Amino acid sequence: MSISTKTRKRLWAKSGNRCAISKIELVFEPTTESDDSIVGEECHICSRTTGGPRYDLNLSEVEIDEYKNLILLSRNYHKIVDDNPSYYTPQRLQRIKQSHEDWVRQTLDFEIRNIKSIKYPESRISFLSRILTGTQLLNVISNCHGYDFDNDELLNEADVELVGAFLQNAQDWGDLVSDMESGERVRVKHTFSKELQDLEDNGLWVFGGVVERKVRLADKITVWRISVLRVLHNDNSEIIKLGFDTKLDKS
Image 1: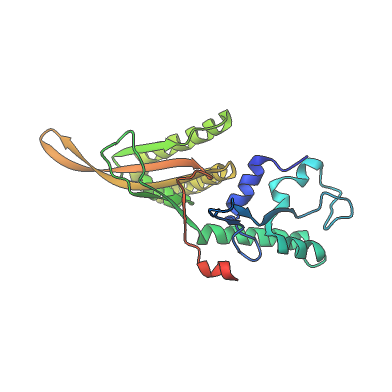
Image 2 (image 1 turned 45 degrees about the horizontal axis):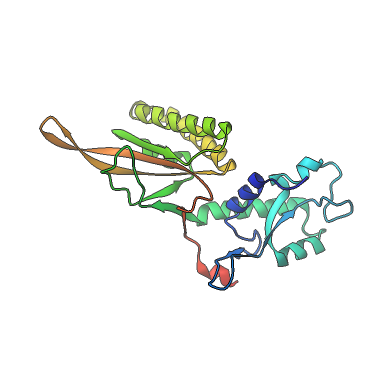
């Protein structure tokens, strides 16, 4: 067995391309004289080799290469971790991994800019921010007069079903949000958070925002709020990374 492309993409994306321990960036931009430099390694928390660091005979061949048994580290920390298995136990590494991914979600911001709209070509959408929580999503779809939803080309039927259901739910709840009681809002936010996590687990990120569009009704010009959502693959070249303190790269 080997690590699948889907699992590899998920690990790098959720780790923010950073070492889970040192936080240093693991991919460096190409220069005129060289290609990208990758200094990160996809490390097994429990070794696939009998007698290796933290080897667990209860793990199957499939489980060894699954996301939950992997952590992204620099080459130096990979060696340190494997040379000290009594300190870097599976439980400790799982905590480090979870803490790092939480830090990435809180610290690293993403956006896309100069968004094109087929449905509302006259609307100006300068940028959209990444949507991470049900609360953020509910704010984007609330009190709007129209919806401008779109997505990347999807690669399989499972993703088609996942994205299609998500966008339809967003529009359906957007139409009902003004009539929701407080308790129902809480449940909807929770549902949205789970759906966002499902998309993220499949390498899909959601970006959103609200734009205003002038609409002529009879002889009167009125302004409509348009909810904008985009579902993109997390390696889409249009995604811009923001928010890391560059001092971290010097540590």
